[in-house]
Image (cartoon, rainbow, N blue to C red; front, top):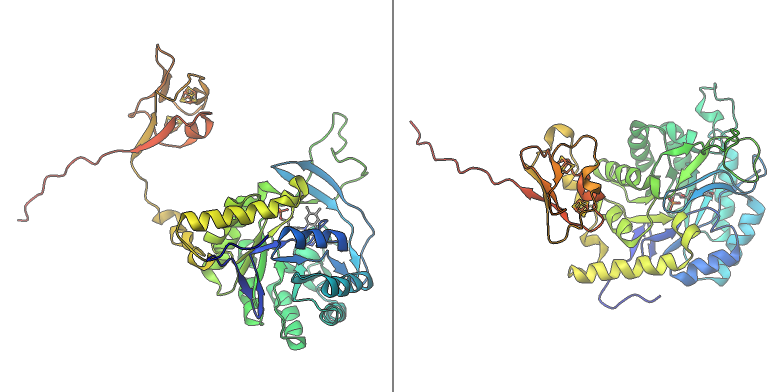
Length: 409
Ligand SMILES: Cc1cc2nc3c(=O)[nH]c(=O)nc-3n(C[C@H](O)[C@H](O)[C@H](O)COP(=O)(O)O)c2cc1C
Ligand code: SF4
Ligand code: SF4
């Protein structure tokens, strides 16, 4: 898809410029040449190759609990060995015109493996290094071990010093951009880790919105509802359910660390992408939405972003990046606006859904089957609006009584 004239969707990480912010996130969409060709054809700004190891810790295949528009829980997935990944990267760089990220991992202490994969991916032509400190499925080490060096995947991200040490090692090996992908278990580790990696020379960070891990629901007999799998480790929890955590992680990093951010997790539509950018993201990673709805998702996102920019009379994403951050504050600094719900009786169809909220004593049905709100009982919580199927409910700001000017004594 070609970009509309007058619009600039490009984003930059170090020296690498992506034509648009949409990276296909490492995963089941990025483990074969044919899929990466489809991503390039769909107009993706970049593709992150499937997670790679020197020696794959355990052989596997993808299994999921999938609720479209909600969650993909996936406790197992196929990974690439370095030989296979290197050949794939070489072929992609030879035949396709799409910037590639190398997504690779080892336990925190296996410095030699990190170095070897970095060297081989650089040699094969990767545009950007995306060391993986984010996978919640990888850690087969003894969970009682407190040694950061023993742990893999997302557990590495809980140790900012280990992350920064690995970035520093890679920095010595190349000028190409390094954008580690992290999913620590605490906000403290997220912010400390991002700052430590920035100081170690990272050109960006890729943060994944978390619930991160979960367990699937059960069948009647207590078997996990995940076909073709016996036994269940904690499963990475991706998809729409992560969206708001993604906004939070992106905003927190964007507000505190001077580094470009890629956000992924639950960004399903152009609107979600624009929101992530307004919360401070430079780029976004997309996976589940394409697993559910196909490669056309990329084109729809790009068209939506372009329409949005044109509608607002803007020409580049730089003009909206971080726009929402001034709204992001601490709870002691927010101001409640005094107001109440109102029902537009012309629109109301009398379905009664807005009478359901158990906490609300403000809405009643009139004799002519129209919902009506008692402004004195309404606390302005916002729940009824989300229930109304026809958009009949809005909010009215209470007018402040005129305050008579009191003359100074
Ligand atoms: C089945 C599956 C496999 C994944 N494998 C990887 C991986 O190999 N490396 C990685 O960094 N992230 C992996 N992810 C995470 C995605 O790259 C992405 O960050 C995450 O799914 C959030 O985006 P989404 O909500 O758009 O899916 C995987 C996700 C899924 C669903
Ligand atoms: S805003 Fe909350 S309190 Fe007010 S009418 Fe709606 S549900 Fe009831
Ligand atoms: S949910 Fe909407 S349409 Fe239904 S009764 Fe309430 S205001 Fe009317």
